[in-house]
Image (cartoon, rainbow, N blue to C red; front, side, top):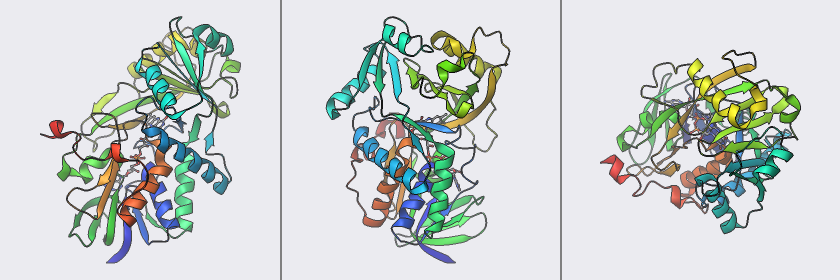
Length: 385
Ligand SMILES: Cc1cc2nc3c(=O)[nH]c(=O)nc-3n(C[C@H](O)[C@H](O)[C@H](O)COP(=O)(O)OP(=O)(O)OC[C@H]3O[C@@H](n4cnc5c(N)ncnc54)[C@H](O)[C@@H]3O)c2cc1C
């Protein structure tokens, strides 16, 4: 049986960058995935991801996001391609909304540069955006979008060049640890590693079943539209935008491939991941179109139930925790097993820094990066009883 220093279970967003990080640290690493990332079955489909630092969800994410931003820029240089494009992001809502008050809190605590715009200023600067009069907008100019597919593809390619062994289309069926080493059973064969890192995304519960973690998986729909007024959505003319309270969001018309829109809140619960995820339905699209017609009417124009402006749509999975914060920790019963999961629809931007954290934990047993608020510890006691 082949043996390694570290095995990584799942080579999607977090696993691909963890493989790269470990390969850089010159340990023998094997990565396994049931599919061939990047793919459309998990949580990284949909081409683009928002990068932002002024974090409304919790100010403690700010130092991690800052570090991640530096790492994204470094990776762009290393791969000689722009992975993170700083288009800016405008978040809009009532002053007391969770979105606006949360961004203000993080910006105040961490001295972030955020510009406040009134609804009138927004409507005149960005013609596509039509917030109601009682909304304000917070503009984070250094926010932007990440090319998700290229990031994972290039991350895995570089990991391979640096010596990582990557085995794709090979589902892991289970693992067992005797404290000293972990035996990983895959569809093709078995292997042994001194440490195991589990980054299984929506499948985390299957691979960490004995912990009974309170993850729920949600199906999300995203869609791209050919804008009715293309100049208003051109890159450079509009930042990424998000509107409270449902966090309806959209991107510029990147590369002329359409304006991507979605909603952060909501989504159907997925109870059985062995069944195919239902493709986007007319009802899903109708809900997105309704939201768009209120605040970005020049995207689709008067909507009559036809799909002339719809270019494409797809699904993607969120793995939610009850408090919507990630869980990153050592396995409470197996000291040589580590995991990162429950990214609750906002993890992609952190992938390079999470990779550093996981490599630190697996190789050193600790990390200097500030992740204590994301550890499992006493969180979710009630929901686990
Ligand atoms: C529509 C949508 C929009 C989003 N927007 C943003 C955004 O703008 N900004 C942001 O920061 N985040 C965003 N996110 C969230 C972000 O994409 C996720 O948090 C992140 O992709 C999660 O990474 P992951 O590694 O946990 O999962 P994945 O990338 O899905 O990787 C998990 C991998 O594990 C593999 N795996 C699982 N089980 C097994 C097994 N038994 N054997 C072998 N392999 C296995 C899977 O095949 C998969 O490749 C969004 C998510 C969605 C769905």
